[in-house]
Length: 236
Image (spheres, rainbow, N blue to C red):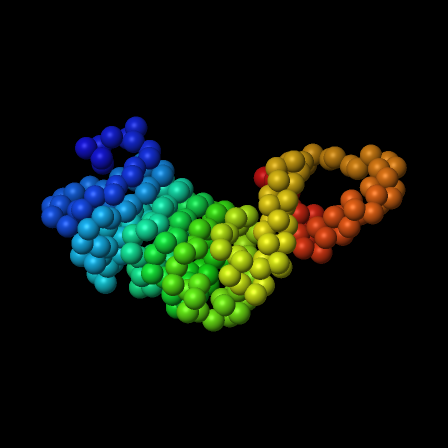
């Protein structure tokens, strides 16, 4: 029913699925029309996760779904599922080729190893805009300096990301926050840039007025330093 119902674009499953037949997982993995997917478990998490999310054989439902080039999932919520490092690491390589723009794996058992492997994939995840990974084990047992540095590099290379929770855990929280703000402003500005071939010059006399305002001039300077791609970009 799930596979055939193309009108179903949002699905939340929070069931004890340990005794579900293999056909159930197969149909769910083929439900490429789903756009918002929230998976959770209430019992038997250890037994369910390899089938529902990611397993050693690569046949977890989410793994298979994300590998399908026709998959329409844009919001993936895996919060509070007892997710561990190896599950997240198994999923990470499929995310860059997916349409996922929001991923939530908060309130799980992710440690520094899993977090770092995920962060290293961020520059490749060009559709990604929002990341939620707070309330995981990495917050108290990780090398936060190393994780923060990796995240800073990832967000610098991928300017589509405009929201990340849990930044207060990192020593670089202030610069990370400023970078997210710059990414957000960049995305908004790109919406108003002229299309290729369209000329739209700054009105004569406007720049002196902009630069006369100290705060506005500082904002322009900040954008020039942190968002250079804005000024060489043209919409196609």
